[in-house]
Length: 469
Image 1 (tube, rainbow, N blue to C red):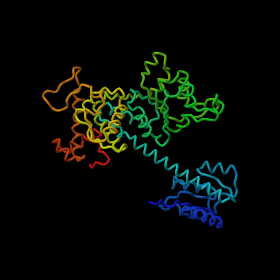
Image 2: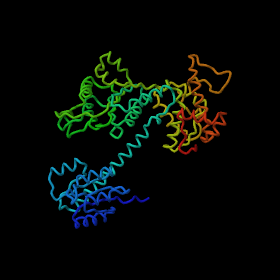
Image 3: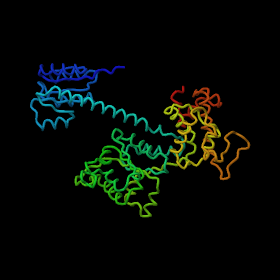
Image 4: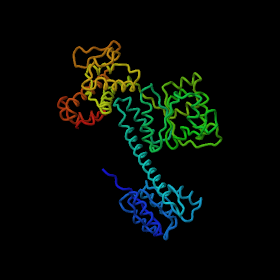
C-alpha cells in the first residue's frame, strides 16, 4: 500500500518565493499548501490532515513567525519547522532553535541547500516516529501482566513493582542468576513517568575495573592513554531515563565511592574533565550476591548499600515458585513455536512432573534455554520424558495421575504446590486438546465454563497466536 505524500506548509508574504518553493517541493513528491499570512496558515493547519513540515517566515504581515511555530507544534506535535528570514542574526537563530525549529535559513538561500535541509528534517521526523513506536512496543512488552506467573511469590513481587514504578526512588533488585532481575527493572522503567526516555543497562561485572569508570561517566579526549576522542558515559546516555546497574556487587571500592557521590549530589564529571554534569537518572541496581554480608566482610561500602537499598525487591528462585513452571513452559513453547517455526504441543504428564521437581539452578534462563533446545531438536508434537536431557530425567518424581498409591518423596512435598501444579497441567491439557475452546475444555474437565475462565485469567494462561478462543 502506497504511503500518502508528506504535507508541507509554506508561510511567506512574498508571492514569488512561495511559488518557487511550491514548484521545487512539489517536484520532490510533497503535497504542498501555501499561506501568505499567519491567519491563513492557522486555518490551513486547523484541518484533520496532519502536517509534516512547515517553512515559516519570521516576519509576517499579521503576526510573528515564532508564535506561529509554537501554535503549529501544539496542533501537530511531530511537525518539523524550518524558519526563514531576510534579517538573519545569530541571536534569532538561537531563539528559533530553542523554540523548536529544526533549522534556520537566511534569505536569499540556495534551493539545493534548502532541499538538503528539508531531506534532513524529514529523516529526523522518521527517526523520531520510529523511536516513539519502539518505546510504545517496549511499554506493551513490559506491562505487568506480561510477566508470567500466578504464584503468590511472583504476585507479591509484581505488586511491589507496580507500587514503586511511579516514584523516582532507587531500587535494589536481588535474586539468583537467571531469575529475571533485568525484566523486573524494565517493567519498573516502562511503567514509570520516564518510560519514553532511555533505559540504559550496564553489567558492572563484565567490564574491567580500569574501563568501568569511563563507561559510567564518560571521558574527554586525552584523559588517558588511548582516549583519542570524547566519549559519552552511561549516566549521560540515560539522562531523563533509567540506569540499570547489574551485578552492582562487583563494583570496586574505588568506584563505589564515586557512585555514592553521584547518588548523593546528582552530579558527575567525565574522566579527565573538570566540567560537572547533572545526573537526571533513576537508578535501579541488581545483584545475585548478599550485599549485607559483603558489607560485613568489608567488600561493599555500608553507606552505598543504604543509598541503593531504598526499595528492596527480592526475586524468588524458580524452585521457590514451582507452581509457575507449567505456565512458563507453555509461554516459551508458544514463543519458540513462533520464532523458530516449530509446532510443539506441550509436555507429557511424566515430563512435566520431572521438570516440576527439578532444582533449576539456572532458574528461568535455564528453563527458557531448555525449551529452545527442545523446539529445535524435537520440532513438533508432545515432549516426552525420553526427549528430556538425562539430568532432567533423573529426578525422582511423584506421578500426577490420581491414584490410591501416590508416593510422597522421602523429603516430603508441599501439598498446595503439588495440587496447584496438577491443576495447571489439567487445564493446559484440556485447552490444548480442544484448540483453546473454553466451552469444550470446561466440558472435558466437568467444570462450569465461568469457573474455568476465571482460573485461566488468574493463572495468566494465553492461547498460541493461531489458536481460536
